[in-house]
Image 1: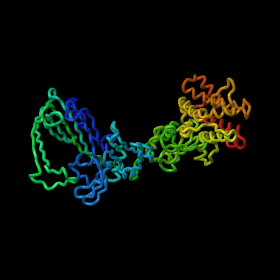
Image 2: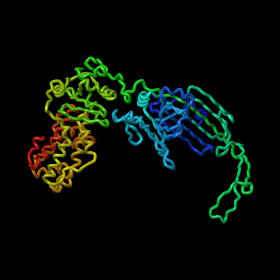
Image 3: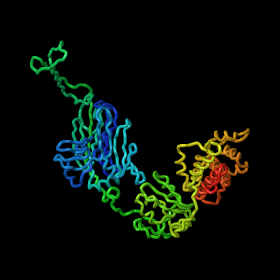
Image 4: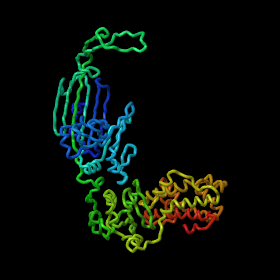
Length: 588
């Protein structure tokens, strides 16, 4: 601690309205020691707020932190006032409180919440100590910060969403803040202060106070006198089971008084305070709450010469243009919460984010993602920005399958292997149960989640390709029930007991050993790739890809798609091999 700290030099000019997270409520204390004792240090930072109607703002001129409540409850004074409404002394409504503190009484903690109109207007959902907006990519809009003891210290909100709400309601946010620092020192040597200093100042950054007081331990004024008064009753009722006090008289009362002065080591308490009232103005438009039309700030490349067009100009159905993107855009989108993909053909699908319209896309010969411009332009602005980050100049044409669907209106009948990952596992398991009465796979709580992220757009480079192989192995080889398979075909001396070797041995009971080896070879190759992630030499990785029959000259995106195809085909072939009936070949 030093003179600058106690005079709040580091925070003297601080404002809350420009912050990236606006405190709707703040009550933070830091410090050491006991009040009034040598070495005591305390730093208190507090904020209270209220959303005030723009035409009522003048009524609050001159008010600040002390005029904003810490807790909230309905009032029946001068008529009923709901717990979240702020009224003037005359009873007129001035605004609302966006953060509410409900005191339940007793020793229990208070219950803190956001104003429900704010929550509903922005369509927020609370998850623990955060409020998210699912319709905007599950973005975190508001949050609670807690102390080390778990007490609520702050409730913060992103200004972009707060100002949208304020604009919709023609309101402004009143921010009243208070900052206090205290420091107890043994003397004033080395400090530019004197006993009984008392300084008041006011500027654009608030009203500042600083004072020095001599104290003794406990924080009491040094040399201060204390008077103690005692008054008591002298009634005698030793024999009364139910004593009743009568009126006071000189005969049944007594009193006494004593005086003394505070003594002890002389200490000095240094205190600084800052009070500031700010106003956070509403946004010019309210696209979320009031659904105002907002000009787009997003542009897209539309030709090979690098020409860019604003998204709003692309937002009509007859635009007749397609946009091109790096394939990373699909991987990015599918990594986000609330996203999904639905495959139409081998090289076309629809992808969607929470709150948006599904976007039909295809991949072309240059392995770029191609989308009709209108399908991007009609999305919410936050989604346009995601796509724009991966936008590139056109190259490689529309792609045969997208062209067939969107231009020639004759969709092809190819199939994407990603759409059959779950089905291939289910039919293989079903056929094992039908023949041997046991499941091929053990259940796992993460299987569905792993399947959802097993797609070719994970395979944009070698690292992604190997990561995809690892996940395919996790939902197949890792989940094969070896114990159940050993009950069908027990391993003999020297035979492998791993999951895939056990599967091959069981298959050899219904087909030839050569055919059993062929049915599982691609699964072995994928399992070898899984190990490549850690320590398989590059030559061994090539051997594994050859075992899967992946063309080495293909780029990583197509290698990933082909690996999924081979994996799916393997389980359909296994199901066909062990099936007691026909029809599997058609499903393949």
